[in-house]
Every structure is written in C-alpha cells, then in structure tokens.
Length: 402
Ligand code: CTP
Image (tube, rainbow, N blue to C red):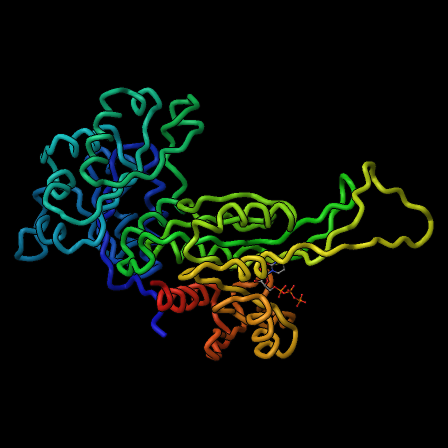
C-alpha cells in the first residue's frame, strides 16, 4: 500500500506585510514537517515584521527577500521556482499583493513569480476590515477568482487595529488543509458526493443527562479529509464529539441516533458514497422525563428502546452504483463478526476493527483493522493510523465507482 507522501511536492510560501506575518512561520513549519519543500518569499514589508532567518531555520531553504540577491543556481531563479512549484500560497495576503496580482504588476520577486507560474495560487487574505470590504479590494478578489485563483478566509474577529470584523487571517490549520487539497494530485473522487456519519450520539434521559459513548470523531474526520483531498464534495452528519471537521466539509450536526437518521435520509439520495463511521447508540431511554430525575434512595432501572440502524437502512435502499461502507467495532472475532455485519447491513465494504486494546480504537490515533468486502476480500491492515485507514477505504471505494 502506498501512503500519501508530500515529499515530492514543492510550495512557494509568499509572506506579505500584515501583522499576521508571524503566523506564516507555523504554516512553514507544518508544511515542512509533512515533507513539502517550502521556498519562503518575503516582501520588503514582511521582512520588517518577521525575520527571514526564522523561515530559513524552519524550512531549511533560503528565504527570498529581494529580486537582485546573488543567484544560487545558473537558471533565472524566479522562473525556475515558478515552474517547479506545485502551489503558490500567499499567507498572509495584503490588499497590496491582491491589487498587484489582479493587475499583473511585476515589481518585486513575489509579484513577478506570480505572473510566471502556472501552479495553483492560494491567497489567505489578512487586513483591516475597511480595506478588505473596500470595493477596490473586492473587485481585485473577484478578478483573481475569475482567473482561477483560490481563496481561504479571512475570518471575522478582533484585528490588530482593535476593530472587530472580517480581515483576520484564518486559522493556519485551515490554510494548511486547503493547501494540501490543492497540491494532492490524485483526484479520483472528483465530481462525487461523499456522505459520512461521524462521532457518537447522546440519548437524553432527562434535561441534564444522557447516555453516550466515547467516540472522538477522529475516524470520521480522517475520512472527510481524505475524500476532500481526492476531489469529492463531502457532507458529514456529526454527532457530539471532540474532533472538528475539515473546513471544506459541509457539516450537519445531530445529537441523537434518530436525528442522525433523519439527516442521513435527506442526504442519501444524492450521495455516491455513504460511509457510516459514527458510533451510534443502539438503544435510547424509552422515556424522557420532563424534569431532572431525583435520587430516590433506591436502585432505579431505565427501560431502553431500539434506535434505527442507519447503515442497515441505507443498505436496504442502496441504488445502483452507490457504494456503502460500514465499520464494525468488535472486542473479539473481528473478521467473522465484521463479515456478518457487512452482510446483515447491506454494505459493500466494511472496516472491522478490534476495540478494547490500549492505544487502538476509540479516541486513539490508530486502529487494529481488517478491510472486508462483499466479494470475500479480507485484508489484514494491522495496526494503522486512522488517515491510512481512510486512504484504504477510498482506494477500495474508487475501484467500485462507475
Ligand atoms: N450503525 C448505524 N446505526 C446504528 C448502529 C450502527 O448506522 N444504530 C453503523 C455504524 O456506524 C457502523 C456499523 O453500523 O458502521 C456497525 O456498528 P456497530 O456498533 O459495530 O454494530 P451494531 O449494529 O451496533 O452491532 P453490535 O453493537 O451488536 O455489535
């Protein structure tokens, strides 16, 4: 199995003169950590705010700060970098760089190279709210978008100029994920709609208590991000959990199994792929008491009634060409139990995983898993990271899509 590697990718990180320039260090660091070769390019004003030495230390590459520095290679350097790069990421992007790019100006290294490259360009704007909402800036953004440039953010929030509004650099984690989606070359899910259930459910028994489980939502998150990398449009019906879904996914929140079932029923007809990764409560308290249940001094019992099985429901209505994937968390006999579940619930693919062992399953980064399918395949994946499981799931899904 070939894991996604970023070490064959090269990105130009253009840093321009916004107070948020220091946040570009985190971006440089996270891209470099993944293996991406990052060429930092600082405009003159950016270099007044953060030192090129920081970027050189983080990326191990020479930071470009001026057009006429001594060349390191005999090629015309800005053209060479512009041609090699898989992505131009401008973060933070000021109103000035947007204006220059929109009008094709080329009076420094960054603006010149932006004209010379044919790589995808991603801008993460950061500026004062009035500057951002100014018709000139908005017109420049519209021009750049129409030419195929990508944008992420800005966020709303408190700005360095002490005002509150749009203009804050969006979270570097979101910029990073957007950059990775643009750099990922395998787009075998382009044009497909992927629907995922994720997280756990809370089944209320009174206004303050519920029955829940320990699902972290990390598996659902890994699945959503992998599908986005591969070009799908992604909807996630998420139960309560700690994991935040990737920025590009459309998230529908559901509290209980029944709410989750309703949301899935609405989305399912237009989905090409359905992945049931949520840990759905099989039972809910039969009665929801209107007031808080009081201590009685004696043992109490709660009657539970069955919840709908969302995966089995989807399996029974599956239309031709739709691919349905389930998960099975088992404490023993994972393969045999998984196969029974796959058949009973009408899934084509199922990840059986062993829970209960330390460091794997709920909340952990890894799973001890097997990949089963309806043609009898049972691949032992061993102890694998959740992002690797997600990759293998969509490899198997892509093989089946029309
Ligand atoms: N599932 C579902 N709706 C439910 C219960 C489970 O969609 N009400 C889905 C899960 O998202 C998972 C698969 O069914 O993809 C198997 O979940 P699991 O909890 O292992 O199976 P159960 O049917 O609950 O079986 P059991 O608890 O008896 O092992």
